[in-house]
Image 1 (cartoon, rainbow, N blue to C red):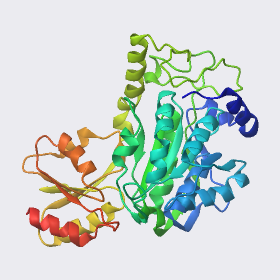
Image 2 (image 1 turned 120 degrees about the vertical axis):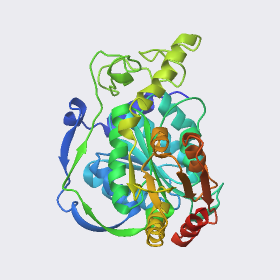
Image 3 (image 1 turned 45 degrees about the vertical axis):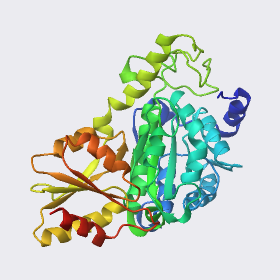
Image 4 (image 1 turned 90 degrees about the vertical axis):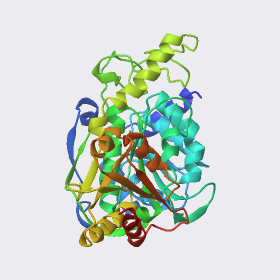
Length: 406
């Protein structure tokens, strides 16, 4: 794939808006507009839209798809009020392509989708990873495969967001379990995407997207912008832990943006094995070397736990209740909730795989994260509780699995 320069320059004319404080500072504190902060009663999808606006997103291209459409509807209404631009595209392929183009004009850009739309985006997501294009995708998962149960819940996109495109590359993915985290993790996804020049996902589920809760939105957020250093190559550096300078179109740099193997200036080097090897390794290492800072988790009752329930996203809410009930029955269970799914924190599970401990992983798929935990658990027993009927996993089901384990 290539990036049509006429289209990009057209977007530059349409979208260009300078955020000098974000371009020239590693971070800045930005207050939310009047009325945006404080107590709110929102759905998860509405909170994600609020988080995108707070993060400085000023371009959205998308195609409506259940159960993420409320994000698109909110931003169609609110982005123009914030000085941004909204575009409904003809499909998800066009949507992600427009997001890539807008990002290269210097605008923080995003889209939202669900499983079938994510499938259509995969080639361009690989292009974004290879061209080091920062962007955010909010994937509100539903029961699949294919069209599946369009209005039902699922968590089957865990592997798709990481391995959906071909080749070796890294992405970021965060798993919210509440309306508040739909806001905070959207901001975090934008921050890490901009800092590392990688695609970032908010990997929600239908139940979280449509959940309504009271949230207290902050008065201000800490934002990170791109690190533009004039004259430095935009596609290669051994300095600054492998994250190159990122100019934008119209800034005076001679930019070449290609999905083919390229050197540090963007020129094609498809016949050079050393250039390709160095490029692919750097793209991966710039994320993996920061895994300790990117990866986040929460834990409850792990001090003397013999069984650790590993749960993420909406299922973690049911898992926490099940663990609390198990404790009242004298069963030493604990909860470990990964918030960052990609990069996967193998050290986290290796560190908790103590003598006599075992793991239980409930999830709304056929064991996608359970397999990851097995690979990191040092031979400890890992049981998988799976459910793919389009319904959320109830605390009673997790409690029964805990009781059976003991």
